[in-house]
Image 1: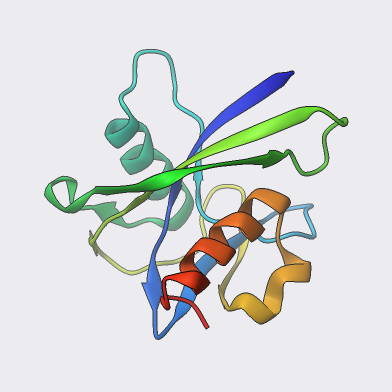
Image 2: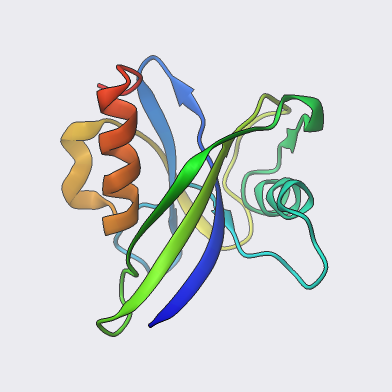
Amino acid sequence: MKIIDKLAWIYLKDKKILSTRSKGKTKFYIPGGKREKGESDNTALIREIKEELTVDLIPSTIEFVGNFQAQADSHAAGIQVLMQCYTSDYQGIIKAAAEIDEIAWLTNADRAKISPVDQLIFDYLNEKGLLD
């Protein structure tokens, strides 16, 4: 089994989660991405969020939420994505950049618009009373 290792920034506001849709994609994903060689989780997450959303995560506020694993969206059966999730405060104004085409604030009612691993994350946040 192949595992795609990714990091994600969970940012909630008014019981909605910040999600992004990349150019050419139909599904929304929790923002984040992959580490570059030698990067720590924090360094990679800070870089990815700056590239995608133009904001600076505040390193002292980064907190681990959990790991979630499921079938990778748009990949062959058996390829899994492992999403290591963090929360963090930020500075700046969130706006789409790089490959991001759209930003949306989603709730559990938007499950059809998201990937299988994001559905697990939505379930977790919903059970904790953090997501409508």
